[in-house]
Each structure stands twice: as C-alpha cells, then as structure tokens.
Length: 322
Image (cartoon, rainbow, N blue to C red; front, top):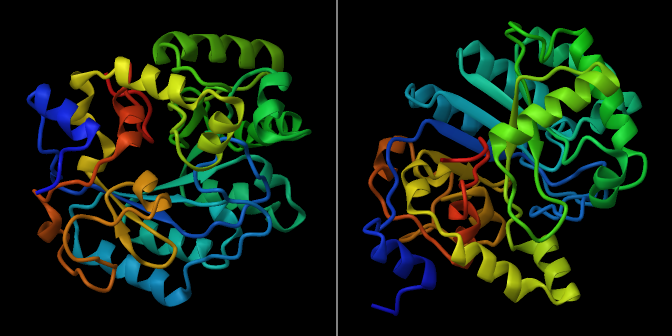
C-alpha cells in the first residue's frame, strides 16, 4: 500500500478514516459543459465553446437507473448550463413523472437567452427546484467573478422567477441561492450571510428566495489557475488545511451522492469528476451498474482538494455542513 495522502492522514487522526459511502440518495448529473458564461471560479471550466454533452442513450440510461433504484430521491442536474442541453426537458419530465425531486443548477442569465424564454415557466410547471448562482448582492463583486452585465441579468431573472412564484414565502417552488467567495478565503457564516442577502435583495430589488447556500471555492481548475497566477495557492491550501473540521465528515456530500459525467462515467463527487479521479477499484460507468446498492460501503477516493469540503463550517452542493 502507498503512503496516505495528507487528507487521508488527517481523517485518520480524527478517527474518521476510511471515508466510505452510505446509501445513495442523490444522483448528480453533469449533463454537459456548454454554458453561456465562463466564470473565473468554475471548476468545470464550462463556457460557450464547450461541446461535451451526454447523448440521448446516456440520458435514457440515467432515467433507467432512477427507475431501478427507488431509494434515490433526487436528480441534481448541473453543467455547464444544463438548460442548454437538447434532452434537458425530456430528462426533467421523466424524472418528475417518477416523483423524484429534480434540482436545476441555474446560472440565471441563461433564462434570458432568446431560445430559453419559456424555460422558467417550464421549470415552474414541473415544480423543479432551482439552485441559482449569485455570489454577492452587489454588481461589482458579481461581475468581478462572472463577467460584465451578469448581475443585472441575474436580478432580472430572479424577479421573473419570483413572479412565477419561485422563492416566495410558503411557495412550493423552491429557489435557493448560492454564494461562493470572490477570493481566496472561506465563506462567512451561512446563517448570518443569508440574513444579509435577504435584507439587501428585498430592500434593493424586491427579490425573495428560500435559502442561501455557502460553498467554498475548490482549489482546482480555473480557481486553482488563478491562485497559482497570483501566488496565493500555497496560502489558500494552508487556510483550508488549518481549518479542517472533523464535524463535517459525517455529512460530506460524497457519502450519499453519486456523480455522473456527461460521458456516463461514475465518480465519487463532482470535483473528482472534473479532476478525472476515478473511484477506487475498476472504472465504472452508468452501463456497468444496475443496483446502486453495490456501491454502498465502498471507499471514497480523496485528495488534497477535499480539504475544501471540510474547512470551517464545511461545504457541499447543499451549503455548509455544520
């Protein structure tokens, strides 16, 4: 056996090793890498020129896996901008027909594209939950990370979603917002920041939402390139390592979420997928597994980037962990 990685060694010292998967309740599907934006922090490195996309055969197989594994409660669709995929609506409709919760990870501005102007109504009609990126409630911070004009477009899209009933108090149309830092630091308290977001967005723009999810910037891909370019990579990694929190381990998303790539390969998490870090053991794809129970209690592949999920209050696609 090889030497333990620093993260595995830290887990061991905390009495939390080895990290293993429990029952899978969520399938997170990266349906494709095409996006109308090219954000600086994007760990997928998506953008308008990316062409990778799951074919219809793959989409149908994902739906078959949902049908075969009734205990999987959630289909979490991401990208790129998942709405741009030609089979997005078919996937949504079939998953909702199975009474699964469906999450659309939306950049908001995609809803304003001429060919997407009916997408918000489609999502509302199928009661799809929207998790929308909004790294700040000010123009300057959002556009520093996501590009010129993105903040105004995001506000317009949020107002539109509110008019459809998304995010309103008591509404079944779930609208959650995602905050990630604009620099090399940890997110602040999710509870406190949510209060600030709610006050600022409501007073400035009349916008309502349900929850704010804080997510740590992972030191991979575009953000890692930025850190190296600015000479901040080592300091940022030290920040993550020094703020390791063993209380986050039990709720790490990799323990109950299975990540599926656009090519059908299966990974322990979305970050491993984008680093091309295969699961331990034989490589698996959606065509190799029928019963997802087979993947329970299997070891999870970890690396240096995993300190991003366990630093401070922890980080996941569902926000902070502790």
